[in-house]
Amino acid sequence: MPHTAPIPPRMRSWLFAPGDSAKKMGKAESSAADIALLDLEDSVSPDNKPSARQMVAEVIAASPNKTRLWVRINPISGHDCIADLAAIIPAQPGGVFLPKAEGAADITQLHHYLTALEAANGIPLGRTLIAALVTETAAAMFKTGDYAGHYPGRERLVAMSWGAEDLSSALGAREQRGADGEYAHTYEMARSLCLVGASAAGVAAIETVQPEFRDLDALAARARRVRAAGFRGMLAIHPAQVDPINEAFTPSAEELAHARAVVQAFADHPGAGVVALDGAMLDRPHLALAQRLLAEAGA
Image (cartoon, rainbow, N blue to C red; front, top):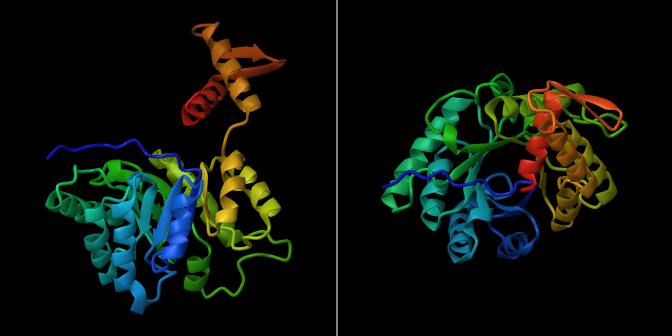
């Protein structure tokens, strides 16, 4: 059975939908989200997980575009994880979202599960991609640099995200944010560790959710801010959040024009380490940023 390395989908917006709600899963699938993230973990009660697995598998099996349907499974450390995978992998989701990941060993373990299930179901090996939530436990915070390097399953990993809710619960913290609405230092550190870890691993860093789903102006401002910091997408919990997120993470015409000008300036001066453009001196890191922006925009 051949190994395959599918091209990751666009990852600007990831819209959660509870796996036990056919209505909400339908809205996520029909939305403009780049990835509809069908959830079997926190939004589904223990009693509802068996029926949710069946519902999620049926939604994926019936979809004409399976690659944008991903599933947040339960943590690798629990028995629900295996049950989730056994139910959904035959339907061929685009990927799985692993919560409470605590380093590369968890990716490898998940990779072995996926490989066995792909082989058993006639699915090309390596087809199922992985994204990981990497700051949801105290131990995970020390492992965010662990995802770089070479290990079994590394080729499946395409994105890393972070979360404040589970981390605050693990820490016994009563507050995540200050009076100004900004995250406290511990959670800003989690965000930064996710970003740096994703960069080291060469995968997309994905910003966590904004629970205040009605404040779309604040959402858009935050999305623009984290994109400027290096994040390449954001999680959403309501369909109304998708459009502001997509807009924030889509390069503007002005950005694309500037990036093309930077690339052209270096092309006009082969071998130059520094070029002048619009009254500014640009060096090779500016060229790398411009090339990356154009590549991500498909331009």
